[in-house]
Length: 145
Image 1 (cartoon, rainbow, N blue to C red):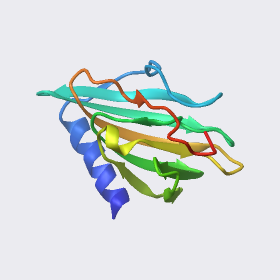
Image 2: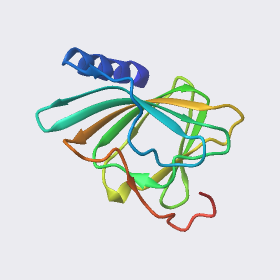
Image 3: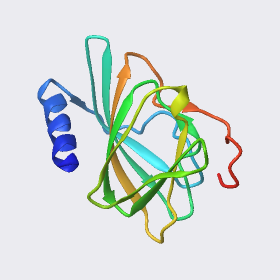
């Protein structure tokens, strides 16, 4: 069901006039080899909608961060291990899974690829107009990065 909701959200935003972009995204937090590209983006009122595809190679992570708006993700390939600022796993997402990341500095998190293949995510960012894609955050004291 989450998969259908994410696809419906992406379709709705696209219908509202999402512009396609072949360029690469702004700064991508994370380790070596983590890449991201903007697939499409638009602004409606005071909200930016940005659809990105993010690839996290085996053994790498997104880095510790939070967002100023809500994110809706869909795992296209691989398995994403997600951790909160208490260093606890708050989800393991396999290919075909959807996830939501709430906004705010009280939701610091990291996504890690603990598998042997790339994790490929499609992510819809719903952000206040002009907000950065992510805010870097220090490691909250976990024994992993």
